[in-house]
Length: 288
Image 1 (spheres, rainbow, N blue to C red):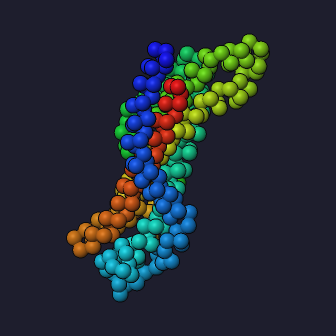
Image 2: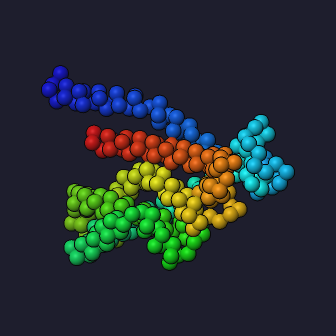
Image 3: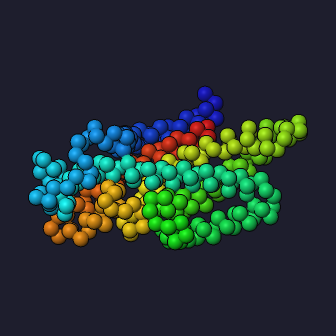
């Protein structure tokens, strides 16, 4: 066996060991994510109770066999609201991440392909936005876009785009200097066709993987804005809005805020763990 083979074997062994150690956590996160997606897609499969059905006679009832997560101040079933709220929270996070990726692709490609001055201007603008705390930037955007689900989605997307744009720019610069792109230029292929056929497809891979990690932060930020009263408005069963409703009853009905908070935490952790696993796997494949 050659020295190179022995070195490669020694390098691969710790990587495989790390994957085996991480597998239980990834499996658990994947299982949680599947259940959450099921709740978002078909909430009726988990509960037959409507999220806005009120029952004043059973208001502030603790968790029991009938109401697994208890009831709130209006007698609404907290379990039903949490299950149906999955759709709203995931929709805001997914839509914001998708819009952020689309904006980042345009932004990053423009910076990488627009020349020295254009690159410097667009990159410095991204640096300025990245210097602002994410929640503060989202609040500034909401002042312009207005509160509500649409405004929250736009705000989270704008907060997500600068970091992803820098990744797109860096990847596009690498692809632009590659041999097949230089060959296409030498053959006289139109610039727009080179971007669409070569630069864009080879730039999107790392960005899509990174977007899975960003999704968790987008869900968390969207819930935070709803908690502040700037996102989904009552009686919409969104997790952040439910936390706001429940904080006034923590002394006598802790379950109103506890269970939405736990589901939000579990979702963000599951998405982040799965996203990190995909990112590590993609980086290992690129290195090999």
